[in-house]
Length: 399
Image (cartoon, rainbow, N blue to C red):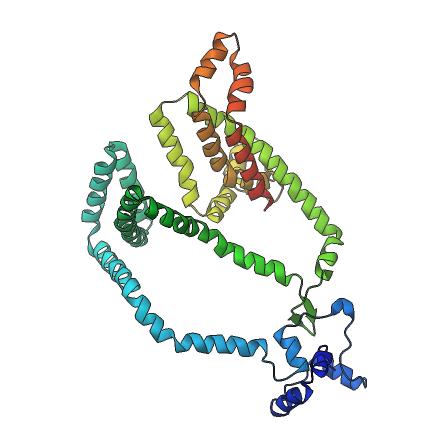
């Protein structure tokens, strides 16, 4: 007897369900076979494990109801049926982008390197008027070519070129229209906000799905939809879970404190002690790591920190070591710093750069020393950036 048989019996639909069952016999589940072998009429379900009235649960009681797989197959067939119509609608919009990418790739790859590199250098000089930046870009391209990555770099550059061109072509007219029309601005800003927040939702939806299936049950080696906290109870009752939790929490707290302390002198020096030109270059090098895979940055530390790495080799020259620098708290802290330190320096630098200089001068005129001015004037005025950096560090380290 299925769980929801009483519903269809009460509303007088048993004959309708039995007629559908006669023409659509489904295979018995393992639980039903075990119940039948014990002489039971069906699988007994306690009120605590009472299933949600899903399609599969209702299908067990009434074969006239479709199963979840039937709905999935129907959606798939519907999509295949309208595929040609969708192509007729979307191809005029996507095909020009495909043509532009193909032409850009063909042009960039067909142009010899001894023509492409000078053209890129000329573009950099025209945009920046900086000879040093031109030589820096040329050195980067030469390095990529030296390690046989020139073709991949040019392909990436072609894609970026097409995307940047389309952004300018579409963005400039829209921006001009928004500046001239309040109605256009009110209409466009929500759309832009939605597009800006769309990428996080791409990661959030699978996360929500994983959270929901944590309440499912495993029966007969299958995950069965349901809402039961037994999985969470088992996890929270394990000692090793709490050991890992408190250790991770402690590591994240230490990483937050250490990162904030190390970042502040760097941000302070960039905000108050160096020229604007040096500050711009420093910001450039602080932002570059964000375009590099974190796995690549973390893996590169193994060259320095392993037992035969650069640091232990230098220690051996003065008769020290080897020290265990990986697979311990120190190695974990280095990984956290690699991930968070550039971000925290940038956030603190933004806050420190916005501190009113006249307040610092007033503090000096009133007799405050340099250290007292830092703690009583500068840090309170820049606390937003300091707190944001600490919060981001804790979230990235703990998560």
